[in-house]
Image (cartoon, rainbow, N blue to C red):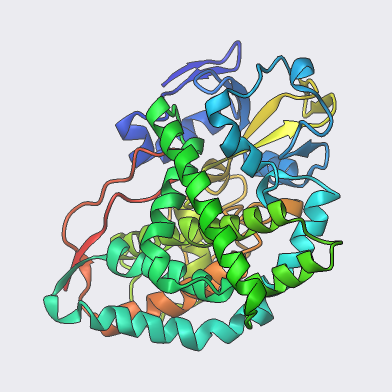
Length: 402
């Protein structure tokens, strides 16, 4: 990492093995030397302090969408390449990529299904599923946890919540992985090709399933969204398809790595056990979050803490760095389940606060105590490595023995 303090400029390859495996020493240097800096490898200004990140997440002068207030020509952007148009045509209807009033309308349709009091009814199902999965490998005395527990729990839960056949889970996972790869550092033509193919295939699958659900609605979220679309006021078919795919993607991607990163942290920090509480879950979300960088556009000319940003500029918010900021968290590199308050930003904040946060928290609070209760003596079989997929932060695999 090269830091130019006079120009507040940083050169740091996000695909460097040492960085994506353990970015926290680099974050510490950045916070101390240049907490607001131009990350040359990305080409935009980034913020590493908790106060800045938390404020920017809530600042309505910044948004996830920009083309509703500026044209591509004004931004100096070239036209979308022909081969990528299916992907970006799909993304423009995403809850994650829209701003009010569209975002407000879309979020209102799905928010009710993910309220804490609503997802709480899933607690028995999550517990049952966790036990069933552990039954499948308990006698082997070893397991790769991502494949056999961390992945099947969230994909099964979100599929059942939406009303999508659980047996399609492996295919949904493959499509999802190919699509979200578009957002990792330095994508290449092969990643783009696979993402477009996955977008087309996933959308076609959902269209077919929506047709079936229209004929035979059930007691699930997808049927509720179809009913809203049928009213002709709340949801277009394109928004319906994109929302369903987004929920399937987002409903498992971060949760898988929250479980994996969390189990690793608990074992390494000697905090594992059947008596885990909510404090442990919140602390593991802070300690090693599954998402480390989130971007925003400046929706107008902005002066933020002395940095002048032009309308249309991108800013990067370093969630992982903010979560280890000693100005906000005492002894931030220490795992402390009694930390109160614990204002981590792992789920974001403001109008784009993760809609699935209550479900993710419930899955962690239910599954992890059961795992350590069922498998006493659980320990790492080998030192786990993280994926080369910054700004997502998750393990390649998690091999355990007991």
